[in-house]
Image (cartoon, rainbow, N blue to C red; front, top):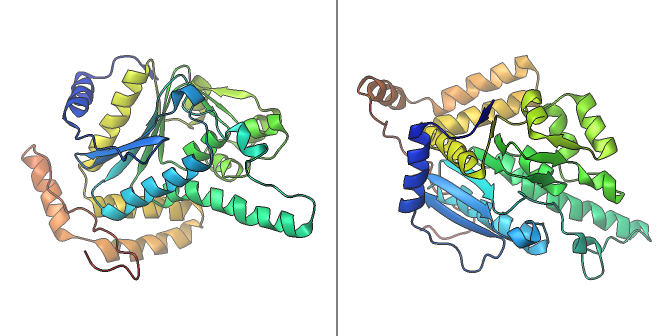
Length: 307
């Protein structure tokens, strides 16, 4: 399904969001802007001239931004969007050149160091998956190479009609190594993954929608962001601990047997069950109003002084 203009409520919400957000971007960030309003965190890739490519600064800033969103407890959902023609062209090619990442393939010791480097990069995108809140990604234009790794670690993917996905690594002589080959087979048929990974072909938005890789396709970037924000608004209206539990259950089920997942669900539900939340949700529905629920608590790192 392709949508051009979003429903009236969505369009109005998008406009209100742009007018009322208290923009407070971190001046030390060069690759992103991060804002939070109405319990919705919005992380924007903001290097359109460089097609939002990923270099060392990108990885450091993404790590810091995700840590901030996860630790404060202020956001109930994270939306990631981009600027310019393409969502991201993936890893910056200079990373592999002189002065970039040193991939020493001349000795066993050098190759062993590659393992730690790759795991470090993987860990950044895995944080998207393990974040306490759902992550929505809005993709326009190209989602290439490392950007596919990033997108597959998110919970929901929305795209414009001109969007496409490309496992670019094979086209530059390497294996995709930061999550695409591990997560994509759990999202679309394995044979399709092999086709894309072996050939480096582009997967257009329409086919990605038919395969279930993306949730919905929109005609324009503006409609795309409005649709992503509407989904975020709906998620943010639910009890945060119930959303947290739902994400935990879905991810556990993906990697375990049905029997194990059912037992896990019993323990999880008993750990977070709240009669108060259920009463408030039911009452809010009857009274046709928004429910009132507590945020997730701020996280304190071990060894940090209490706030």
